[in-house]
Each structure stands twice: as C-alpha cells, then as structure tokens.
Length: 129
Image (cartoon, rainbow, N blue to C red):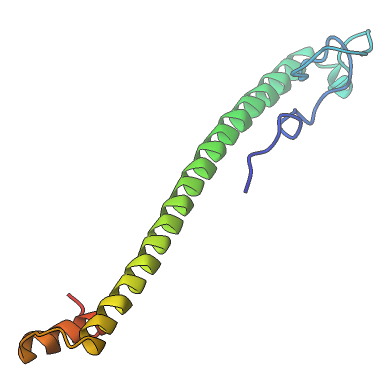
C-alpha cells in the first residue's frame, strides 16, 4: 500500500479562482472575481465565515490524518520487512536443522542414545521448548 500522491491530497473544494479560500496551490491559469465555493452563502456573511472556518478546520484535520496514515503505512511496511526477514531466517534454520538431522542419522555420529533421542526429537521439531 502506498501513500496518496500530492495530487490525491489536494482539497476537493477549489473553484479555480485566484481568491479561492480552499485552494492549496494558486499557480497557473486561474480566474479572478472571488471565491465561488460558497456563493449560496453570500446572503449571510456570518454563516459563510462559520462554514469557511469549519471547512478549513476539516481540511487541516484531513491533512493531519493523512500524515498519521503515512506513518502507519510506513510502520506496517517496516513490520512486513521484519516479518519477511524472520521468515527467511526461519527457512535457513530449517535447512540447517535438516542438515544436522542428516548428519546425525547418516554419518553415525557417536552420541549416547539418550542424548541422541532428545537431539533427534528436537531436530524433528517434536520437542518444543
């Protein structure tokens, strides 16, 4: 899972005007004449200010949450990498255990029978600590 791009994080509310209250970037070709995002609230300037403040607060909270998401994704990726390394190490140890088992069984390494039984049980995975 990858973090959202800068374009995906852009605010949804942007009328394209140079004076847009919600645009994060104002470069390039934009119109003039004032923000049109809240035109329907023109008759009530106090309410428009309240809505504008609320929407800006939501935009900043969204940005903060995106940062939290980025951090969580990064942590998840680190954990996944750690798990993959642990699985690789586990496979290496299984191969080493099989090698040891083959040496004990095939090469007749002189080990007392009691110790040999416990060792074989451990190597076969029957004796879990």
